[in-house]
Image (cartoon, rainbow, N blue to C red):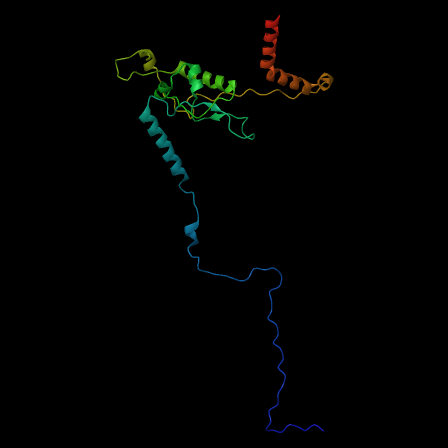
Length: 228
C-alpha cells in the first residue's frame, strides 16, 4: 500500500501552464497615440491676404507700364501650338520668333529686340503654315509700329513723324497683338457610296511612291532622251 506523506515532507504539485495573452482581433491599427503635436494652428494655410495681393499686383503692373511708357508692357511673341495631342489644337504665345520668320517679314535679327520683338534662336519652323502665320504677325506689328527717335528733335531714317508720335498710345494688354483665330476643320459629313468605293489607301501609296521615286525617274527619263 502507498504510504501517506508525512506532515514534514513537502508535497510537489504540477504547475499549470499560463493562459495565453489576449490578441487583437482582426487587422486593426496597433494603439500608438502620441499627443505631443501642439499648436496645430501654426500649420493651417490661410488666404486672408488675397485682396491685398490682388491690389499689390495691379499697382506693380501700373508702375511697370509707367516706367516703360509709351512702349508696350511686354514683347511681341509668336503664336505656337502647345505640345502633346491633348493641347496641340490650341494656340498660345511662344518664347520668340525664329530667324526664318524674321527674314520672311524683312526684319533684321539685331534690330528685332530694339523694336520690341522677342527672338528665339532655338525654335525651328516645322511647317510652312507656322512660318506664314508668324511672318504675317510680324508684318502687322511692323505696320502699326510707331518708332520714337533716340534723341528728341533729331529723327533719323525710319522714325515716325510728329503726327504719329503725338497720337501714340501705350498697349497695356497681356499680348501686344491679339492671338490669331484658328480656322475650324471640316464639319462631319455622311459617307457616300462613292467614298466607300474609292480606294484611298492605294492612292496614298501611289502618291508616296511618286514622291520617293521622282529623282530616279527623272534621271532615267533624261538618260533615255540622251540616248535617242
